[in-house]
Image (cartoon, rainbow, N blue to C red; front, side, top):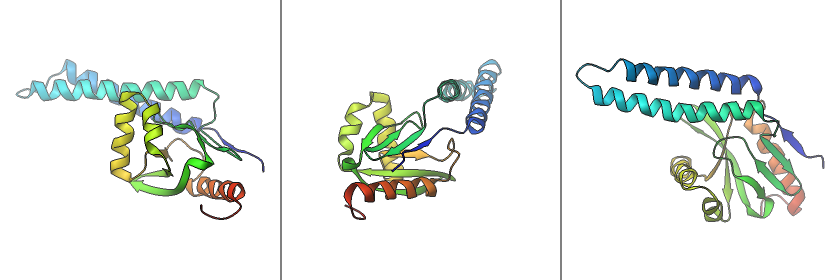
Length: 173
């Protein structure tokens, strides 16, 4: 079977970068123009916007500069490099299930793992905390976002199911 290699949509990643830059600019504006009567809230919102969306902007810049695929699906497993919380390589033996989930108007491909604690243990403390938060919100430690991919998640799910069946010789495990 021919591996499926999906690169991020440069247009979508550029739009993410533009949006993040606007939020960083908004955060700077809040710091320079404090809200009268609630300066602490303006200061907090300004710094939170700068830090969070600055990280999003850096990730988007990195994706635009990189030629690395967002997702690779082959006979050995899935390689996830689609987001800032990417899992890297996931062998088929670790994949229990995958399904498309929607959370606050955003679609994700959730990947259920046999050993999610192993993936959390490999992550940095910040990434681990964010992955646990995602897990509590949508039920999956591994979540591949639709936002930067040029193909529908349902198509991606079809490729995963096809390769899993070829790996196991039967649907499901």
